[in-house]
Image 1 (cartoon, rainbow, N blue to C red):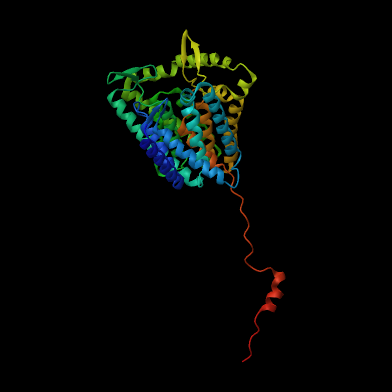
Image 2: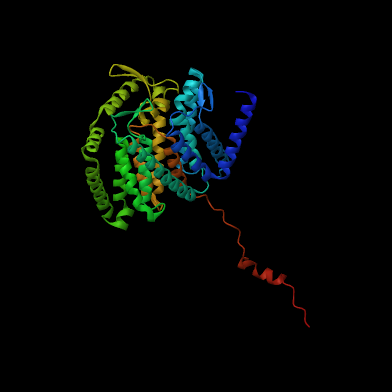
Length: 434
C-alpha cells in the first residue's frame, strides 16, 4: 500500500465519519444494507487491504461509526443510563483483551479473531446507543429492517424456485462449489423474524401487518432451528404481552394458531412429502447440537487460573479442541462461552447487565413489550450462535430508547416577582400633565 492509497483511505474514512455523524440515520441504513445485502450474501468479497488482517468494507464503516460515537460520548453532559455505562465498560474490556493479544500473538491473529463478534459488535452498539434522537432512530431501523427482510425473502424464493427447498443436512453444488442447501443463514433468519414482529406490533406501517405472515413462513422454510426457537420465544412473548392482551384479547394466540394451521395445510397441498421430510430432518437432526455441546465442554478447561476466569484469555488464543476424534479451531457457536473465554466472568456479567438494564428501563416505553421480546429472542439465539453486528445495532437502539432524559435546566422567570412590583412602579416615568 503506497502513500497515495493511504491518504485516499484516510480521506474516505474522514468523509464517511463526518457523514454518519452529521446524518445518523444514514449511518444506520448504510450499515444495515451493507451488512445484510452485501457481505451477508456474498462469499467472495475481496479485502480492501490485505496486511495480515484483511480490511473489509464493514470494518471501514465500523471505524466511522465508532469515531462518531466517541465524539458523542466525550461531549455528553450525562452518562446515559446503566445500560450505556455497561456497554462502554464491555468495550473497554474488549480492548484490554485485544491489547493483551497483540502483545502475545502479534496483530493478525487477535485482530481476525475479535473483529466481527466483538470489535464490530461494540462499534455498532456504541454508535446506536449514542444516537441523539432515539425515536427517529427506532422508526428508521424498523423500516430498514422490514424492507431488507422483504428483499431477503425475495432472494430466498428465487433460490427455492431454482434449486429447491433443502434441510440443514442437505448440500448442493452451485457452479461447481459445494454449498448449504439453505439460501440464507441463521443471522438472516433471525433478522426476518424480528422484522415480522415489528410489523405485528405496529411499530412501522400498521396497515401492512399482514406481511408478517409471509416473513414468518420464510423463517420456517429456511430451517434454522436456532432461529425457530428465537422466533417462537418472541411470538409467544408478544402474544402474552400486556399490550397485546389489552388490545386484542386472545386474538394473537388465535392468529398464531390459525396461521400455523393454514401454512401447514398449504405446504402439505403444494409440496407433498418432500418438504415434510426436509422439515422433519431439520427438526430431528441433533448432530450439530451434540457437536457444539462436546466442543463447549472441551473449551472450558482452557481457563486455568483465577485471572483467566476473571478477565479471560487474550484474543488470539484460539478455540482449538478435540471433538469426535477431530481437532478443530473454530468459533464455539455460543456467544456466552466465547465471551467467557475472551472476557471472563466479568464480560459475561456486563453482557447480561446490559440486557437487564434495558429490560427494566423500557417498561414505560410505548413499545416496551416489543423491546422485551426482542431482547429475549437475542438472548436465546446467542446460546447456539455468536453475536452479529446487525443485532448489536438493534440492541444499541434499544439502549438509546432506554436512556433517561437529560436533566432540564429551569429557565429564569420571565415575569417579575411580586416583591419587585413597588420598585417597578416607582421607576415608571410619571405622566406629564397636559
